[in-house]
Length: 413
Ligand SMILES: [Zn+2]
Ligand SMILES: [Zn+2]
Image 1: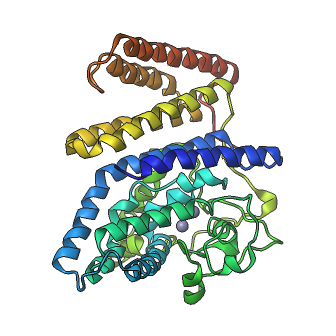
Image 2: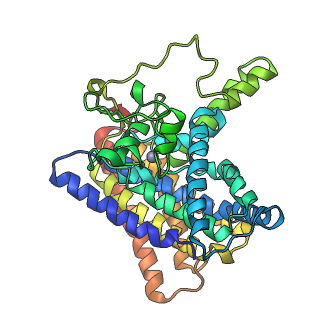
Image 3: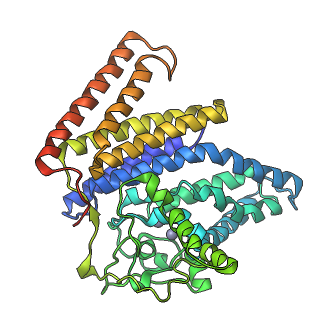
């Protein structure tokens, strides 16, 4: 069973707890559209992982078996200690490359696309970095670190990194100089000048101090979150693809093969020296992407997210028993769900029609037993009731839309 199945409810509980604590302290660190988008992007990433992870782990296992230089005893604590330090070291370089190589930045940028910073931001993970990133860890396979050890250490790293995405924990003294902590990871997510390309560590921050990329959070200049070129969208699919499209356009617009290659592999922004640099934000000039918050749209978003999570849970549980085309079809349905919700948030002209159709297909397939197999009469009634509820909320959102005008342009808040 995929251990993420157990981690997701725990992560969600902490997101709820943080939102409640922030609300009690009067801090505005959550916006529902942004948080649901982060969660949606996370669901999409796990969906794609269910397709790809087995493949990359299979390659890792083959390398251990064929090339593995040493054989390690799983019971020895030293193999775990060595694997931890190796994993964290290669994580640093994978993450640093994710910021300093344009193609890899295209994969990683979505993690930085939120202009808020809270525990839900931790869930905003890339769907495409799984295509590249496992290559960075192959030296561990070459040394012979067993697959089991690799998987457990990687999971510990993922779980550890979750807690550093919060504004509710201040500076922690010496710990900020040894471990990745909320304070030094806040800097990593900053678009302030002093924050750019700093603090790449996963669990330990010592690698940044060793390789000259460490910076401490400044009290006199609050961190402004996000990227220099903002995403300006709630769409999880666009969040994952936007920079690839950008690279494609840059390559087409660049003459000469070596320059074209530089567009792909040089640091982001290479060749733009003549273009005016984006204005660096100061805390006083925070401008974040936002769209009008409509009541029924919020309620619909919460329920649509619940459906996405129900489907994701099921996919993670049954993924191993599905064929590759079945998994791909399931993943496509999940992605369409997430995209449909984003279109409702963004007030796209076609959003309500698309969502009405999508809800009919999802709940219709459930009621007809096409998806989870033959279902009982009460379950059929429940699915049809959910469809009616969905349509009801879309109709109410339509009423709100009529009052405000639609499509709603993104506005800065
Ligand atoms: Zn990063
Ligand atoms: Zn982060």
